[in-house]
Structure formats: C-alpha cells, structure tokens
Amino acid sequence: MTKAFYVTTPIYYANSEPHVGTAYTSIVADVLARYHRLRGEEVFFLTGTDEHGQKIFRAAKEQGLTPKALADQLCPKFKELTPTLSLTNDHFIRTTDPAHEHAVKTLFSRLIASGDVYKGQYKGWYCTGCEGYVDAPADAKPTCELHGAVDWLEEENYFFRLSKYRDRILAHFKANPGFVEPTSRYNEVLNRIKGGLEDVSVSRSSFDWGVPLPGDEKHVIWVWFDALINYISGVGFPDDPERFARHWPADVHLVGKDIIWFHSVIWPCMLIAAGIEPPRKVYAHGWWTVNGDKISKTKGNVVYPRDVTAKYGVDPLRYFMLRELPFGLDGDFSLTAFTRRYNSDLGNDLGNLVNRVLALVEKHFGGVVPEQGAYEPVDAALRATFEAVVPRYEETLGRYEFSLTLEEIWKAVRHANAYVDQTKPWTLAKDPANRGRLGTVLGALCEGLRELSCLLAPFLPNVSEGIRRQIGAEGPVRLPGDLAWGGLAAGTRIAKGAPLFPRVDAP
Ligand code: ME8
Image (cartoon, rainbow, N blue to C red; front, side):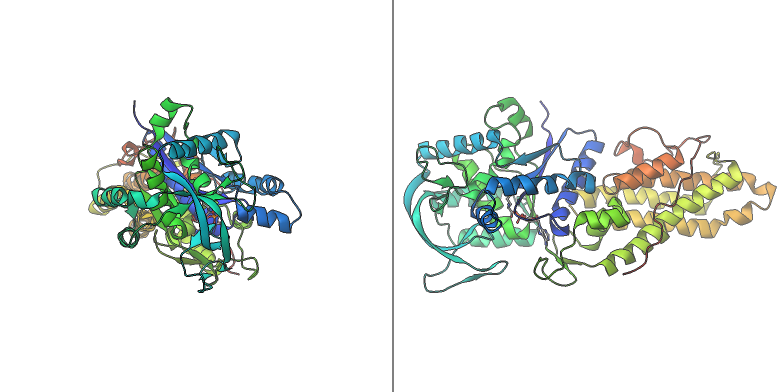
C-alpha cells in the first residue's frame, strides 16, 4: 500500500469571515496538493472549520444566536474559499460533524484509560481569542499580544499529563530535525520544551459548547484538544483503519506561527500517548498585516479574498501572496503592492510574452506551431535557461521556498522576453530567406510557453490552463516529465485568446 501525500490547513474558527491572512495558508496547501498530484501521487488535502469552544460561544451570544447557528452561518463562507481561491481540498471538515465528535471521544477515552488524563483544579489566566492558557502569576494581569485582555479562570478541569512526555517529545525533535520548520521555529520550540512541560487542562466546565467528556458530561473537551483531532478524524480515525493507515502520518501541517506550540508539542504528545505516530512536519509561516497594520475589523482594514479575486482574478491573488513574502517570514498586503506586481510580473512579463508570441505565430504561420531548425547559440541559451530552472524549481519547492520557485520561473519568462527582443522575429519576417530561422525562433518560444504552463500549474492553475488552451497543449500536466524541453509538436494549432492580465490601475 502506498501512502497518500497528506497536507492540512488549520481549521479556522467559525466566528468571523475569512480574510486574506486565512486565505494564505489554504493557498499554500493547495500549491503543495496540486504539485504532488501532478507528480502522479495520491493526495489528500484537508481544511475545515473549528466550531466549538468559548470563542464561538461568546461571539454567538453577542449576536443573539446559538453557537451552532453562528457556525452554520459562517461555515459556508469558509467553504466558499474553495471556488474563490481555486482550492482543490478533498474534504472540508467541521468539528460539529458527528464522525469527528466520535473520534474526539474515542481518543479522549483512550487517554483516560491509559491514565494520561486526570481530574484537577485549574487556576490561571486564559485568552479566549487564542483559546489558550496564559502562563503568568495570579497578580500579573497579563495581556495577549494578539487579543489584548485575558480572563482569570478557576474551575474543575481534566488535565492531560503533558509533563510525562517531555523526554519523548525531546527525542522526537532530536531524531527529526525537519519536524518543525523553519529552523528558527524549531529552535524556539525546542528551547521551550527544554525549559519544562506542564500538564495542560483539557476540559472546561463553565460553559457547555463542545464535545461532552466521556464519563463526565458536566465537562466539554477543551477546544484545542477537540480541534487537533480533526487531522486524524478527517482521514478515517477510528472507524476506517485502512483509510487511516493510507494517510497518516500527515506529511505536513501548515500553520501560522501563532499556533505552533499546539501543533508541534501538544498534538504530537497527545498522539504519542494514544499510541499514534506524530505528523511528519509542522511548517509555521509568517503573519500578514494589511497596510502595515494587524488585520482587524475595528481597524477597518480587512481584505476579503472574494473582493480581490472578483476584480483581479484568482491567480493574481495566489501569485501575489506566494511571491511577495518568503514563506516563513511576515509580510504586508496592500493594493498598491498587489497592483504593482500584477502589472509588472503578470502583465508586462508573463501576459505580454504569451500575447506577443501567439500574435506572431498567428501572423506568420497561420496559427500553427512552426517546425524548428538547428539551434544557434541564442536559441541554445534560451533552452539552457529553461533547463536550469527545472532542478531549482524542484529544490525550492521541496524546501517550501515558494517565492524563490516563482522567482526561478520568472527568470525563464524574462529570458524569453529578452529572446524575442534579441531575435527580432518581425525583422526576420521581412525576408523570405529567413523563414526557417523565424520558424525556429517562434517554435522555441511556443515550447517555452508550454514549459511555463507546466511550471506554473501548481501555483497559477487557471493561467496554466489558459496558456495550454491557447498553445494547443493537450492533456493534463505531468511532472516532472513534462518539464523536459521539446514537448510541443510542430503543426499544433494555437488559439490565441484575450490578454491574460489586462492592465489595472493602482489604487
Ligand atoms: O487558530 N497572516 O483558527 P484561526 C497569516 N481554530 N496567516 C493567518 C493570518 C494572518 N494575518 N490570520 C489567520 C485557529 N491566518 C484554530 C486552529 S487547528 C487544529 C485549529 C491563518 O481562525 C494562519 O494559518 O485563528 C493561522 O494559524 C490560522 O489562520 C488561524 O486561524
């Protein structure tokens, strides 16, 4: 049995609409899912909504709704991200799905049975925004960096013996240096583990919106404990062991840096305690601001993905987010930066290339890809650039350096544009004696476009399809085979379409 490539996004809190920050993780997960599918692998891409807990309970109360009604209202907004961003998630999980709740109870019961969960008294600070405990003395009145004021909590809770797993998780980190990425985050988490692990409260008894705790239904299971289990309940745990074995462990959990601790320490320890392998990798990416500020409704700077895609298209948003910010670092979203990249990288570089090459093929070869003759050094140099991109494409993608991958692809785009200027097809066309040479130049350029359509397929799927339609490339892209130079046959009929990226005005 071959294991599927399994990639996840966090499941998003269903208490407000998704914005570009939320969209980011889903876009990245989609790039990985598409890339692995194009390589012929079985892939499972899971996303969804986190619907229990005090945060949703409180938000619903403020709006005079039941928590379930609020989640039902907001969940479709997250599901809409699939068409809005051209995502190819294989499933959308909700933590209120009965199958998920059953998985949570099953795992929890295992930990009660193994003595890893015990009853105690929790006294401490809690940030409802993070749904997380804040480690600070009672008189410290701490605040949360992201959400401001935190609450004092004193209630009877069940605790998970996280402290018991300190050595196991340390050993796991040591044995798997790629377990958490980027490396700076790995070191950060490792140092925190070395500082000691305290048992963590995993139930709440002061409100009732959650999965009831097996054997003590006055309690609901802590929302993080519940939510993390989505990664296994989404692939068949506990009732479909064959499906579970085909997917688990997840190849990568993509998360924002805000939730790295839950994913790289609490979650693997929960799994180890339950006798399940930890995920293979947790990749924590950076944080988006909008116009230099934290994304917030009160600040009025929330950018909704559908507003951007309705105006500019899906792929430009995907391109901007993947290109603008080196994966792992923080970045800023502004329409000024977005339209700048749209007009320069997409319009001037890529769109212009496609447009001029196809116009020339239409004009001089009646819309049929011409035969190529022997290569001159200038042609060989173009081919060499495309060939050099391939290994760097694979390497950078393998390291999740998406911005660099796109930079590599754009080296080929820019070289192809420079090649048009160097070979001057419009001058060659003036002398019938140069017909063969003109064919070579335009044939090589069509081949370049074909290869670009393959390189771009995981990133800009709609643009990739658009280019393939226009150049008459047939069938689905297959990686890495289709990256070899020479896949487009002479005689292929092209179908020039409208410009891919009509120029837009900066705001
Ligand atoms: O934390 N920049 O849900 P959440 C970059 N339900 N990424 C951002 C972002 C921004 N400004 N804003 C959100 C939760 N994200 C839990 C997760 S998983 C078992 C439970 C992305 O709605 C980023 O991936 O607060 C972040 O980790 C996630 O959305 C947080 O989503």
